[in-house]
Image (cartoon, rainbow, N blue to C red; front, top):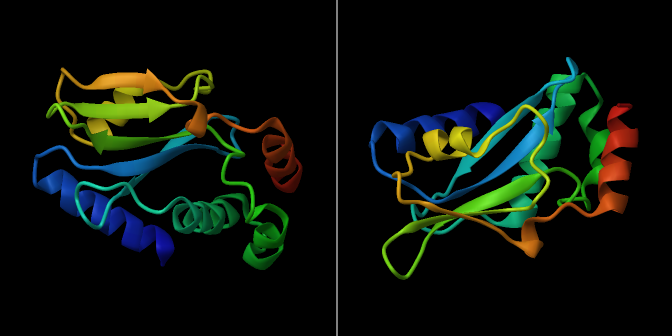
Amino acid sequence: MLETRRQYRLRLMQSLGKPFAGRFYWTPLPTGQWDLMAFASKYHRDPPDDNRTWKEVVAILSLKWGIDSIQLARRINDCPHGLPRGRVVPMANGVWGVFLGSDIPTGSDVESVLRSFRLPANTQVMTDEKEQIIPEQTERVRLALMV
């Protein structure tokens, strides 16, 4: 159900054809590839809350990996910096900004973020320490998913 709500909100925002704010995570798939998981903001211009978004990520990971959601939540609910992530926000100068860590997974690209959030060509992409993974949290996520 969480994925359905997330997908609905994302489709709704994308259907408007305008840029929108949000948060995103690159999540590992059992195949070894990475998936961009985008979360549109309910308020169109402010990114969603970190903790709430991470809880949705954990729930979706449990479905994709076939892991009990309660067990996975116990192990990694406090690891929101355990996977590569970022946020999309409108900036004061009227330009959109993408803030992400310097840890984009191999085979992933920023262009997929720009497409998902309907961002214009003049979007500024910047690294931000707040979006950087924390190695201890990454290790806990890796162990919980057994990758």
